[in-house]
Image 1 (cartoon, helix red, strand yellow):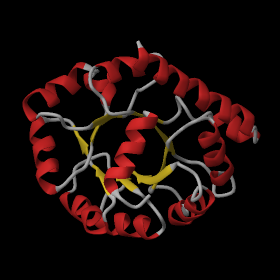
Image 2 (tube, helix red, strand yellow):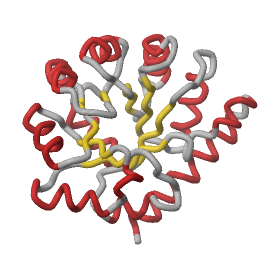
Image 3 (cartoon, helix red, strand yellow):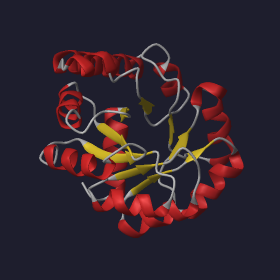
Image 4 (cartoon, one colour):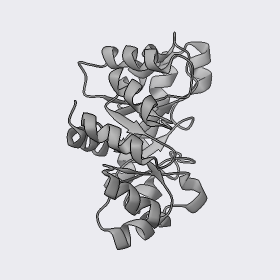
Length: 217
């Protein structure tokens, strides 16, 4: 997918963004494949690790013929956004709001998801052209903050990340989240260290199942 709206819709449909942080270059492709086989719709590769660009390119190639969307996370500046987009990122996520990052994404037609916490940051992000707002760190403010943001600002798309688990994901979705983002709660680091992709797949599937059940309640 190259259209930001189509990527947004796929993330919304799947409900989960799996954040891959600290996964080695040799492991990144099998891990991403296992996550997708566990029904994860969106895979985020953080840009703050070694060989991030190479990892992005490799995973993008591996999942090119699937319905997965692959993006970059922890993108702190426009130059990094440009590099990761060039490597195949279909969405770009930041822990903070950097208008230049958002504008870089807009220029390439790539979904921009800057991190926000306050209504002021949310409005600034939307005016800059953000497609989705990442509420981070979500655990600091809880599910109720989503409604507090959406109330005065209308039907904005919010993806809470930080402290999301299978146990509390439903609370954020019920509060109006488009999807949830999770790292260690969905990505089994011990299984990766053991090279056990079956466990990686099962951990992902368990998390996705919890999200699906929360949405149908």
